[in-house]
Image (cartoon, rainbow, N blue to C red; front, side, top):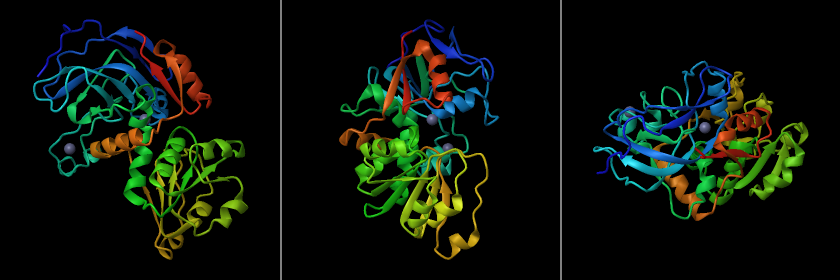
Length: 344
Ligand SMILES: [Zn+2]
Ligand SMILES: [Zn+2]
């Protein structure tokens, strides 16, 4: 066991959002005593995920201010509480969308901690990673494989697992998989899907992205706006993963599913998706969704990423430019994920 060497309140700082849609400001933070099962991590890099922006702007009406955002953390362990397991001071680790769960409910006991009714999102009612330090329950602090590209690994811990989990839940290596939307999430989905050996089609709204999508490993690229090309793919896909948050011709997309095919949603499209019962019933198709993934799925994803050198495509900003980085994300200019490098 190791304990914190810091005294309470000393030299902890964070970028704090005081209210919705306001710029974040650097402030000293008092983290208080370390929880008995918690681990403290000095943040080195933290990705900016679209959900950080959604929480900053209170788009889902669940934000709690003051908020410390950031949930794609890469850093080093600085303190391990007496009842925390398996981690040691100095170890390189990651923390993602969740940073705690009850550890005793049916979901936690069966390995699906991410479905725990008491699961703790890292940036809602908890201090996130745009800070000198973050704290998390030990089960949600992930040792990073040595060969991983640490500076760019942050986005794997939220965006990466979000698209990896449905791939390993639902696709077999012989399957045809379509990824809808080639942005922050979608480009990682293409990279994972290609590494897993599926036949991969990238659906994007812009034909100018075709070459880049193929560079990420897609075998085919199709424009979601080309309804003739989409219709031509009728009955084709075993799994479609949608990462978009905008309205699509959902009926046409479901029509591209093979018998037993599945449309799986990870993009938070706020408008309801109309589904005709017969298009599911006759071909035994399904529509589903999932949040991030379990701790074991996250470790499996990190292992695969290190073995296949899968890194998100990133742009780096010093953390002191956090408000500029958020403005760039909000303007839709991020190429493809933004990572902030700690510079306190
Ligand atoms: Zn995220
Ligand atoms: Zn639980």
